[in-house]
Figure 1 (cartoon, rainbow, N blue to C red):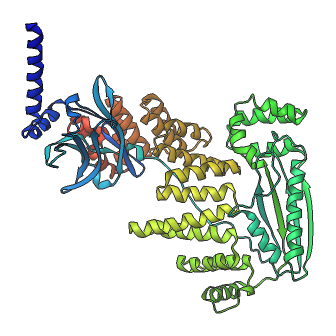
Figure 2: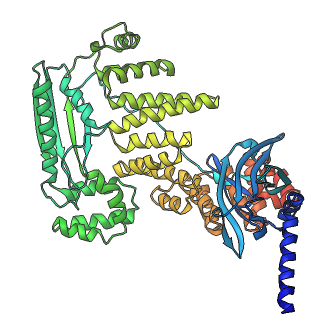
Figure 3: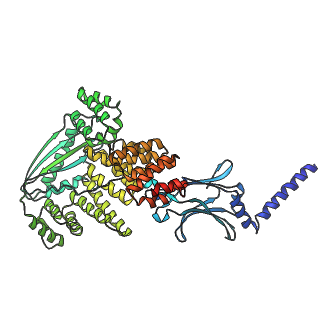
Length: 593
């Protein structure tokens, strides 16, 4: 019995002690206790920039005592750089529902990020705890603690192209040319999709054109896996019926319309053409072509293709592009000399001349006759307004992109890029081809809109196209995936990007960021086969040497890098990759000899 009462007394005493500690003097006590007992972990170390952001994982564990609704404990996370500049990143709140238990301790694990800027390269990641009195709102702040310093820019060192060119002009003074509109269908469907931006809207414009004669050809197609063998013919017939119905309803000039249809019957040949133009490795192309050349039923060939290494590529990128129909439209138009076209186009843009005096192709062509971007923009804007055709939207987007690349004011640059993306998107709705969507992806990539850029790269690849174009798309897509931290995906994309300097450099970077130093070394050496004495390749071989503790590789390649490009001396001195070697004799010798 005495033991029972002694236990009660001890428990009561313990409660009284805790109550006392959590009384008026509890805030200073708790904040010191938190600083002493909390554990903070950050990955990666050092922090690393990726694209236009610095993303990191932070995990904080605290004792159970700090989970208290009357005296809540919070940990502020911020970044300090420059002259007293502070950027708040987030707050970890140790209340029930906000944490999990790890090793029996309340633990919060979060992914946080903040915008990257070169001015932040030598900054510090800081934390500061605070305890609040829930009744009085009184707060006690703890000491500021540095948990990481500096930002590595190695993940930003991608090689990319992102070249966006004007489309070849369709206006030829010496001959008539055909314009092609493509329409894509859902799998096993032949009904036209009248969504916003569909080419049906452009097709409607041809119905209204004031010309004496139109010659149209409709070609239907389907993918090998589609069940209905007549699907290609149905798709062509659907477009024929649509156009002739619109002509009967809307045409008031009595133009003569000749419309013929046909569908692809040799699917194996059509598929073979697509495969030859794809970015598949030569070995996989040969495997697919061997199956198609062997003959047999399409069903049997389709089953055989499912067993190939290329099948996932076929499904994702080639088959969707075969579920289509295209319309070719020919016009007979009179031609005007360049000086007359240019003067008329300027007057049309100013609103002083009837816009019907020039055709859509003539108005687009006139914009190519001036080198001034402001004049080009004005003429393409007029073309967009008057014709609503995809080349006008596309070239206007290119103009905005070129203006953005020459702009030094960040806010203005971003506005111009947004305009470029908007107009390239409109062009993509109206003409969904690989080249158009690659240009859209490039503009989004330059703007820093990573998800939209990745979506556009993937869509461009699905459209198919010449091998030279697809390898460029895969190469820039891989550069974006590296910037997004998707190293395995980047490596997969680079397998279709051909053997180029860009491919080998980005493959080397991907392996470096995955800590595969032997693989990275091999790819950087292959890059040097494309560009002997290249400063960047030697520089990153030095980085590989630093990470793998190979001092000979570090010094030999760093010396060659700064010989080829002296500005890399400053880069190396500030680079966190060489932090362990800063101030050492071998590092100084590599930079100075």
